[in-house]
Length: 214
Image (cartoon, rainbow, N blue to C red; front, side, top):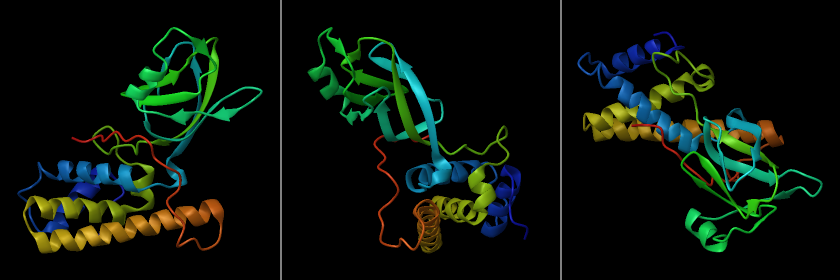
């Protein structure tokens, strides 16, 4: 069996490993659920993006591929980090029309909320976890499938055997998926920091999650 390199090849490979040809319509769902798991658990430098947002009011649109905050700072002569709050708490603290340099932020939907509202145009330096590009007819491959096709296969098979209520095989593939995710994250930590880091925690703290599927 060839290692899958594209969306179509991955679907064929999942069907081959299941030794079934009656779940063709469900296989994209299995892959989609697997990608949800990847977004929650695969945290490597490949997912880290940086951008500068320009805020003129108390809210600014986030990047389309945003999944979670890694670091966030007000840019300027005295660069300092913003502190996270819930949207409700942000509104409780900053419910007046007072404006100043923002000190806190919250994430709601596709927007970054700031408190207090900026008194002038303010640059916000954001380093974030991107959403892993979802495979499909318009996305034949992505960096994760290219680098780790075995992870895609294992996680998709776990979802497939969960669907068919085969608990033994689902458990097997779940364990294999978890081991692969940990190995990928560990390798990512070695790449970023150097040396063996088996006991180091995951990279960064994800403060917002936005599942893509279904």
